[in-house]
Length: 253
Image 1 (tube, rainbow, N blue to C red):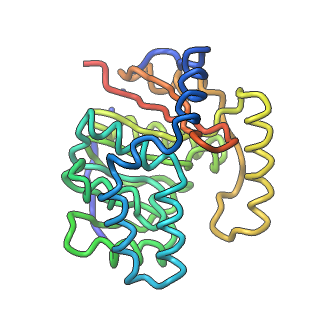
Image 2 (tube, rainbow, N blue to C red):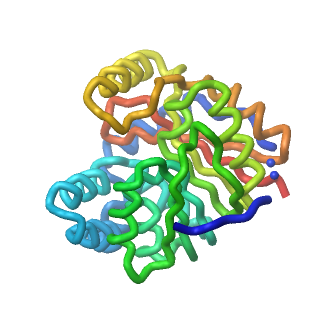
């Protein structure tokens, strides 16, 4: 398990307009965008999890193929190299490992509350610049600093106080950008469906967050724009019925 250090953020209003929705619809028609571009890195990442057993390997391989967050984050990192990365709520670490496999990050520290998942991540990441830290994000993140802070499907699984604390810590720690995937509660039927499925899932998964508590994006934006970030928001639901969006907060230099 690795140790960290620390270091603060503003942005524009969230972009939730017709152009973004047109982008999502056209992307869905194209199918798994950039799967071909990143296929080798994603396949190699999945292969690393064979050492973790059949079930974990199958789960990670399916996530890498089907969850658009992986392709969208790798696509962003191809345009804006991520440097040193801290991945908050990393789970089994497949996103960070994929970034390293693709040469799009210099190092990754995965932070999660599940020791077993972190052990699998460390096993899969053998030989890569990947380390882990065991931490319950609802209780804070300790001290950390990185060029890029990732938090994929994390914030909306926390209560209000924990979300604010985590977001402020990420804003302080990121040298260049924060990359979040969030559940947008203002996408109509998509949002209703996604919240319902998330709540249903909590009856089956012992590792799901305590709550389903998506903030309006404007509320989140107000916190980070005060400290020096510019924000862009794009759909991140390609090929799914969900209301998930990718929020990129970049330091306003």
